[in-house]
Image (cartoon, rainbow, N blue to C red; front, top):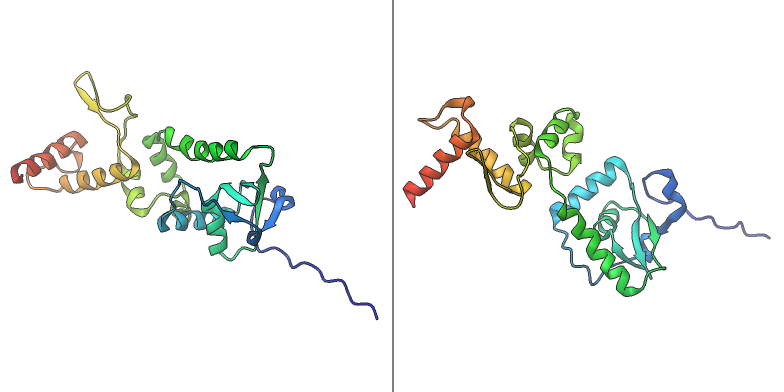
Length: 211
């Protein structure tokens, strides 16, 4: 009697079809024990939402079974119950090269800067169900969509024609804009037409008066 050949179950995975040929079981992969990038729960939740919404759009980079770029993606895929994930094997690199690449892959994104005006404009044109799938939190999205932004004028603060611009992270900018929105309703304020500079002046004045 011939025993029917066992077939592999279909992978639990979602992504662009061009990546299907490079799927491997998640159980065959290990997170990088030398990963210098920390993935807090908020980061993992954002990646999970991305994977659930768009599927896997790019492979994780693997060297000798260890994920050197994409550890957050691997952890998120496991949390979603995926059995497989698409990988790019970097066996042409030495161990030192792939470690350096992992650092560069994370650092390169930090060297870019946001054009907050364009971010706000893009958010305004997205359907509501995709807003959180951008990776921005609800607390960040609201001020981004209502604020008027100027691009940073170089490192640190800079004065041009009597106007001071300064750099802030997206998290800092969200807090600043929440404070500005509240300042516009303060007694003695100028209402909704108050400039950001005037609002910050009132906020800083109250802070100094209570210091």
